[in-house]
Amino acid sequence: MNVLYFAWVRERIGVPREQVETTARTVNDLVVELRAREERYAAAFEDLSALRVAVDQTLAEFDAPLDGVREVAFFPPMTGG
Image (tube, rainbow, N blue to C red):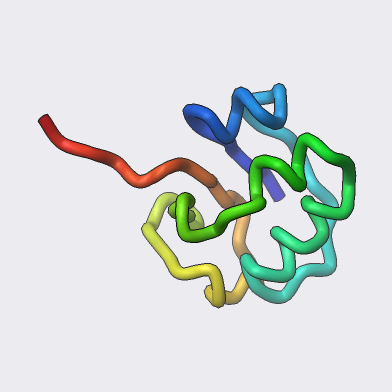
């Protein structure tokens, strides 16, 4: 699955996207796997309340299932102005 990172999430992890082999059943499970990779992922996913997620380009919750999903994107909340 393609995993995309935007804004400060990308800055902390150091890449804008990557192909991830995963057995995760939900976005939360994917986050647990990513956090375990190394410190930069743990730092990026430290506070999930500061993140939003899109699954196949549709905003989703962290308990969203990943069955058949091709893309997950993580980004900070958007602000207007």
